[in-house]
Length: 130
Image 1 (tube, rainbow, N blue to C red):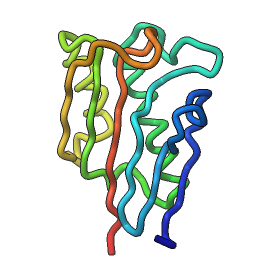
Image 2 (tube, one colour):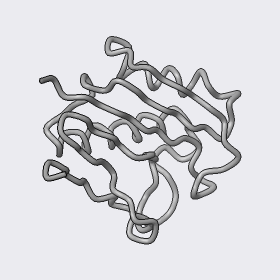
Image 3 (cartoon, rainbow, N blue to C red):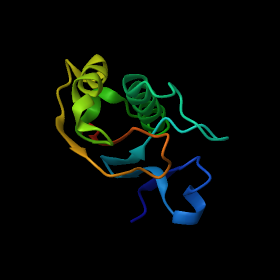
Image 4 (spheres, rainbow, N blue to C red):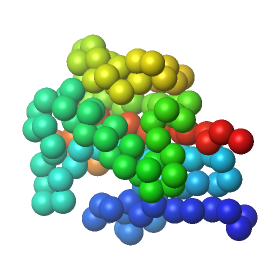
């Protein structure tokens, strides 16, 4: 496909794993699992899962912007949390960005993310208008 654009992962494990932060194929954009990881270790927000969620979504918005898109075009999110009992904190942070957009969304608990300091990871799919 000639109309594919990539946004680099921007993480130390991106080249090892071989993935992009976002891929645009025509009008469809997929944003990979995004966290609040800091380059030198740790996470934006520390152990505040809501702030980690906000930072992940801000990074998703930045990746979308690099592909001439924004959060209003998001049609689906997937949220992976390491402690589902904190779903409300995560959900409220997600709602700060998506309350009016209302994408289809899933939240599931996972045993662990790539770094133990990370408490949440968010994926997004967006579709640009015709």
